Length: 164
Image (cartoon, rainbow, N blue to C red; front, side, top):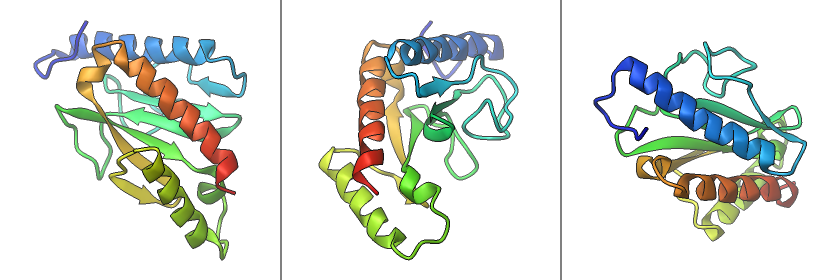
């Protein structure tokens, strides 16, 4: 089923479940036991979602590395509106996001921005170690989505070691 803006709630539910299953299967086949996601799309809680407080049927998929958030896919949150053109993807930089109040955070943030730019990631916001990117909705209806997801995950994992 392809996404379109005129879907009923039931069609959206099936579509979101299809996207979730693609991501879950991809994560399971990625080959890194540290990488995980939630077991099913459902009412969102702190443990089974990326954007808290949103309810199914909207994309809201957390991807963790170990016990830490690494990447999140979602359709909207408080400050980022629902769009017909794209969904959002956050990449979390652990050394910044989980650092607390360190004096060298400014230098780490600048290094992260440079790496994102060098990898041609168009950041729409970068706050407290979390970079937000857009993924075109058209990709969700094609095989291009999983290719983009793989590239984003590869970059997110590599960046954890590069930005310390």
